[in-house]
Length: 269
Image (cartoon, rainbow, N blue to C red; front, top):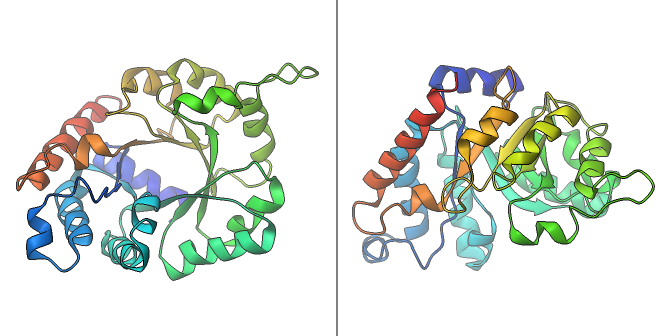
């Protein structure tokens, strides 16, 4: 998907919501196992049908599918193919390896599966990220500043010579590897005080923002300091939407949760 198409969807819907399809098999409603051959796909299908009017992107986390072996990969493939082409599809796979291996990861998510973007860990450097950037109208989403508790273990380490924190170095260096048309960054909503500073480093790049909802991220704070003229944000909510209810009415509850968050987002346009 081209940047202009993503921006158009955001402004048409007045929403920058991304729904995380983290289909944890232990929380998928039990009745689906009794009535469907592929309960994970059926769960995702109903979630997508219910939430599509309120979001612009979907983000399946591949771990929840990989854990189920071959059957999980089949569920993931079917899910990705079912998502409407109007929506931006992110494979949350956090890949990154030596060049020839990264190229195979890129082919997996950009050719075998019709994803628009894949999350990538930049720790191994430019040659581990570059193969993902070779595909037209596809996106790399680099882990910048993450929302988990352990982010402080490495991301806040300070370089004694430059005085910069490690995540700042990552943001500065990696932006030269691509452009605002094929490179995004993960910046966690649990660090809202950092968005103003991050926007000084990467003012025009899109940010994928996890941590809103179950992780307690502050939507108002991150939008105040993270929004740019094209919004420039994809705010993800996973558990808070897809597991809003874990009974037979799960899809209706997901729709209500997605609509509620989307309405809050509309106020920022």
